[in-house]
Amino acid sequence: MIGFAEHTALRMLRARGCRSTFLEAGEARIHALELDGHGDGPTLVLLHGLGADCLSFTSLMFRLRAKFERIVIPDLPGHGWSDAVDGLTPHKMMSSLAEALDALVTSPAAIVGTSLGGMCAARYAAMRPSNVASLMLIAPGGAQLDEASLKELLKTFEIEAHGDALAFVDRCFVNLPWAVRHVLAAGVKRRMSNPALRATIDRFGPEDMLRPGELASIRAPTLLVWGAEERLLPESSLEFYQRHLPRGARVERWLNFGHAGFLEQPRVMAQRIANFARDTQVGEWEPPQLRWLPASATLYASP
Image (cartoon, rainbow, N blue to C red; front, side, top):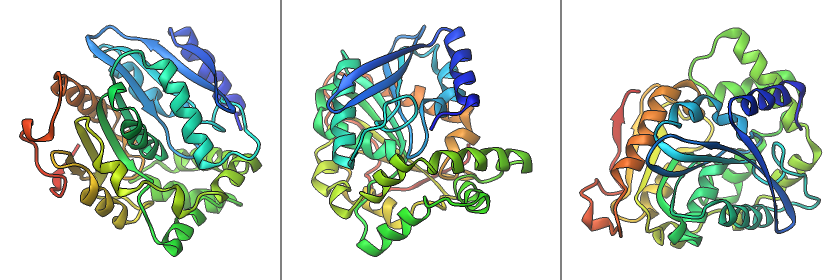
């Protein structure tokens, strides 16, 4: 559900050189925001989280413009300016997104995903290894959880009142000014009240989550960033990724960083995205060739 503020923000982005592209992909019509860059890095694809949209990355995209040749930010099916789809299931969401990315990505790209977008990014890297030059996952969802834990997680997206939205915002951010908390909460409540989105959330089940073999099959250089103040996803989600990402993947745990830490720390996050994509521009990558820490390692760094 797009409001006046979002439409105004998109018009402002278009005035700064962004383009809106619409693609027919599977059963969905997908909207993507595109921005030409000035750098020599590959195409950068940014994938947002559940209930968000392409505007989530406004604070990052212009910081990254000088580092990449092109930036592409799709709205996930049923989100943002992408059309709502009757009976949208997690499987249909992923297949439509993959078809749209196949059309948008004409050479190996740096893929970055956060939350649900992290799950989609990991699955796309497993599905289309030749299209992914590097993979960066920021507080990714999609880990296998038992049915009770998954039900509890999905319940946090049931936003019926402003107080529920405030509680959700507080689980995503580390430190927000009072007024900003309430503005964000109003937007969360409006988006999560969308009946089509609610129906899609209710369709998520254990069978839709990432399988260990999918993560193990990823061949792209991979970095996972997890916040020490993560309060939305359970710690078992991080443990799942640590166990099943291929050897050579790097896991960093940042201090003063919550589920939406990329919004609170855009300067440092933009620098890390650019540096990781630069450092992994190699021909054919095999984990043993790069002397990274194993996936079980956890680094502590403060943005």
